[in-house]
Image 1 (tube, each protein chain N blue to C red):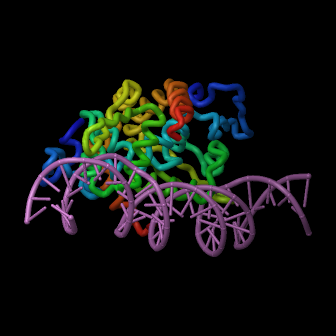
Image 2: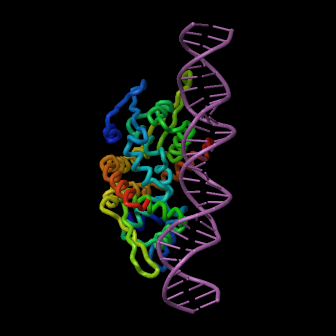
Image 3: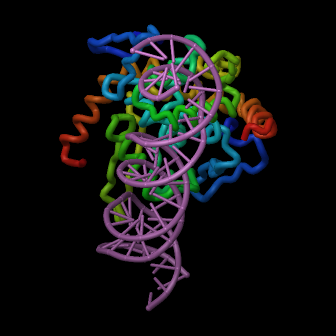
Amino acid sequence: MTAAAHSQSASFSANNDGERSDWDAGNCPVRDVMNQISGKWSTLLFEALAAKPHRFGELRRMVPDISQRMLTQTLRDLQRDGYIERTVFPTKPPSVEYRMTPLGSSLFEPLSKVLEWAAANHASIKDARKVYDESGLA
Amino acid sequence: MTAAAHSQSASFSANNDGERSDWDAGNCPVRDVMNQISGKWSTLLFEALAAKPHRFGELRRMVPDISQRMLTQTLRDLQRDGYIERTVFPTKPPSVEYRMTPLGSSLFEPLSKVLEWAAANHASIKDARKVYDESGLA
DNA sequence: TAGTGCTAGTCTCTTTTTGAGACCATACTA
DNA sequence: TAGTATGGTCTCAAAAAGAGACTAGCACTA
């Protein structure tokens, strides 16, 4: 993944540094896609739903400090992009199930690798922070 | 990556749904790490610096619509977490080079897979959005 | 010698995003 | 009759992000 990933469409332009400068918002899949999945809560919900479908209230309990508002909104956003599916069951009171789509699962495959990395290297990062904070640059 | 990744420390608790509920902020590497690398600009800078080291002004030109303020801040954050290194060269005027650390590169490996996915599936996502938006749910 | 531009930022102000919490309607339970 | 649970919406305050002016030292030019 280098240049090709960024610009499906026409303009490859180089500025006077010889750098690519085609990372404009509308032009850039990376930004368009990452902006969604990198929301504060998206990855958590991805993880939850990758395991199995869940209902609204379940998700709320799994991610205790998400506000209801953000849960609703994040789920809507993920649904809009086609990562998850929302099904209403006409029970009383009605229950709603969220489940991953094939598209969502295919994304979760590489994404889970990043999550694994995060778990494995959390300590190094905390160390780096400590060093930085104690170096007086903070 | 499943349960193990989320809780290095003690408490595994299950609520009455039988779900894990240990995704608390302080306890969860995924959130701690992802919160950084999923910043609006972080992935772009990762990509830029994965190729080769760059200077401040270069980065600013590569990502045209980042504000100087956010560029400074994002670089600082990435530096703090140990992903990138900041080197000042005492030229006139002084120049500053940002380059990836080994930690950063090791993260970029799985991360680049996600970025590739994004590039490959951008069309599907845009389609999904269109369907959603036209279904009157928006 | 004043004007211009380069470097890598900081500072302030405004807009956007997020979070906290109240509120809704329905139905079951104590 | 109050309390619980369902899946939300609405409003208001706080936090984060963006726009743009401003800084400092130095080099080049007119």
